[in-house]
Picture: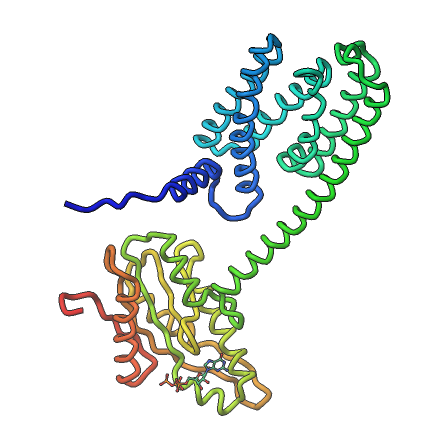
Length: 369
Ligand SMILES: Nc1nc2c(ncn2[C@@H]2O[C@H](COP(=O)(O)OP(=O)(O)OP(=O)(O)O)[C@@H](O)[C@H]2O)c(=O)[nH]1
């Protein structure tokens, strides 16, 4: 019987928090959507922990309306978390957080809240609003909130007036709120810029890690990643090697060797339909192509060999540069590891080189390989 090891409590809590706070995120990376999803979940969790006990306290103190409002908000937060977990619609969930929050805060200021402390909670509005709705919309909503605050504090008669505060408190509430809004704007601006450059950098790194810089084709890692993502059914595989490429370098120099490789890659890419093929530089003067489906693999490989042979590159010398290519081809078996199929294509390539180059050799899967 297998022995189950009991996990320590701190690990169970850590896992629970991670699952709860990332629920509904498409991935756990630092994209805007996953950051916002994280914050919405965090807000729901913290919101419930605050509003539920305060709601109960208000009810016990006889403040019926505030108590019920807080408990309704706590319920909305729980439902919102469940909705986000299910639909991943963080834009809607952000609205569900913010609009009841604006309403609750304005009501707390209007009524004075528990023992006249209602206004102390409004400072959470600027950071949450800017974070969940972004700079433009967040700032607009904070501005509208300030107008509503001024209206409540200075224009209409409210229960707040009967609490006996010094008249200066109203202006101080507005000033301090504007200060927090200003600081939150700066913070959100810096963090969104930082996040944007981080994402741009991450895209650049991903491209650099999966692309060959000279030919701009996929490199080994890029091909393997793309292939795993596609899940084609028994595709064909061609491994190509330019014949006597060393001589080309020796005769014309590395610069023309590079130019020839670029032309070769462009011809190779143009030969195959983009949606149905992956074309990569496997290394040096070796290229690997995976094709989703093909009627006659040998005929297609022969046509490709002729097309590549026809490439000519004008050099600084009297002669144009051209070369032949040897090709090993095979099919990737259903569920077969692509590396196994590549090693079979490599056997074909090796045979093509041994049999005089400028030719195609097909090696199919048999019980022996
Ligand atoms: N210009 C250039 N040459 C490269 C590049 N990568 C590899 N090579 C050259 O490709 C040549 C490969 O030579 P070999 O492996 O001996 O093969 P080959 O001369 O093509 O001969 P066979 O493959 O046997 O037909 C070497 O001279 C490498 O320097 C590159 O990025 N640019």
